Image 1 (cartoon, each protein chain N blue to C red):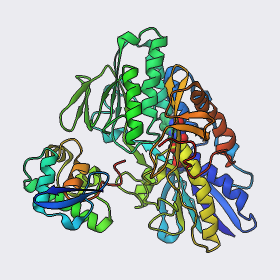
Image 2: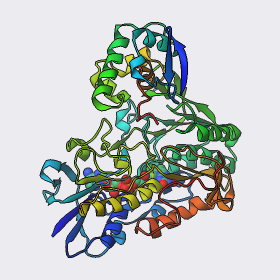
Image 3: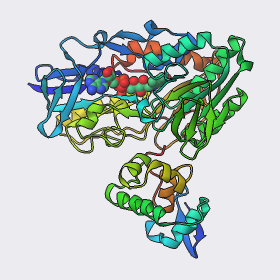
Image 4: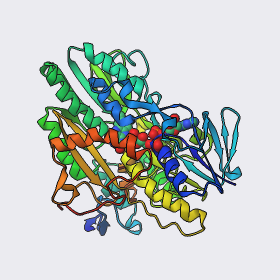
Length: 105
Length: 409
Ligand SMILES: Cc1cc2nc3c(=O)[nH]c(=O)nc-3n(C[C@H](O)[C@H](O)[C@H](O)COP(=O)(O)OP(=O)(O)OC[C@H]3O[C@@H](n4cnc5c(N)ncnc54)[C@H](O)[C@@H]3O)c2cc1C
């Protein structure tokens, strides 16, 4: 566990580099996390994905896989990779303040 | 009479059949096993077929040779499970009622999931080696190939035996050297993972082996389609990798029967308790091997470690006791690395592969995360152990739970 200053607050991170406490998350923290991932701005499309991730996590206890995102979030695979380059499922989970998805081994 | 039904007579189903046959009272329990095919394939052997080391006959035996007498064997495709009714519907119109169900229907490749994969070049310049047909067709192709760009691509995780694609490129390096054309073959390993393997420490060490063997690595490549005209694979973020021959590990999925039963996740894997192996949705359904959604490796050795735990838990379940057997994610894989050598890794849910000696601390004879001839013999012996011990549910001299003895932190 490591604590770092982000968007003016002290934030705790787990060993995967994801946020350790969801309560510390807010939209400013999300934006700061996005910048660390090389995403300069969070637009409406990003937020559709991020909110979907948070909703699924609340219901299932795990962040959704890329397949579930494609099927149910309303954003297709191509766009997911444009919004969150390289690894959409993992990156979006990180920015949404959720732990690394269990499926990402 | 009560009914135990086992779906799938592959590695895990056959092991469970033998274990439960020995443990259950035959005056009280009838065991039924269902599979669609009469032939058992030794899948780890598929790796060696493209290089002419094994042929088809070296990897097959009749399934029935491994069934104990008194087993009710049904050869039919499974249509669906109806968990609320405690029954299974088969394609031959037979209906099987069960008190206890073990699902061991495994995983298989689904090349149709990737755009362009099964078009003009399929089995001409594009092959898989995760099926007997693909492995044999690739062997035929390699015999006449004179060199060029050989690309191995892992489409998406999870896949069965996550080390097999690495073994493939290591063996290709050795084989084309033997053929005297290694300088004409450009080997390229393209994976969606951040490195050579799923676990960071082993990934670093295995990545060094790729370098040593002059195998080019592209990581974080998520394939979106195959361009058959220009012979290239294209990722979702428009990176392109050209090939002359593409060896694909397509998406791996659970069987369609699981989807028809409404019991699977997006890849038709069944949500399963990662320690007890009980299905999350139904208490009299247990799941083992590649059919589960567990975050452990999908491998025969893993199914073997699970089998001991599952047998214990099934007996507890039958006798109304709490499920005490806890699977720890133990995996143990021999990695064939070419030139008569191999690498061994041993790990579980919480501990990544570490260097050291195995199974006897300080002695071995096998060395973890090092390339040795002894490790290669371990891999070759595995086939013999598989047919003679593993499938028959006999004990191997390796603990189900991972041990830290002999390992260096
Ligand atoms: C190329 C390759 C290399 C490998 N190398 C290794 C290795 O070195 N070491 C190792 O430990 N593991 C290795 N593995 C993995 C290992 O083979 C599998 O993990 C293991 O076979 C899983 O066992 P299982 O019983 O879960 O599935 P399987 O053995 O695949 O059995 C599933 C069975 O269910 C049946 N079935 C499925 N659906 C239906 C249906 N609808 N109706 C009727 N029957 C059905 C199938 O016919 C099959 O017989 C390798 C796999 C491959 C492909």
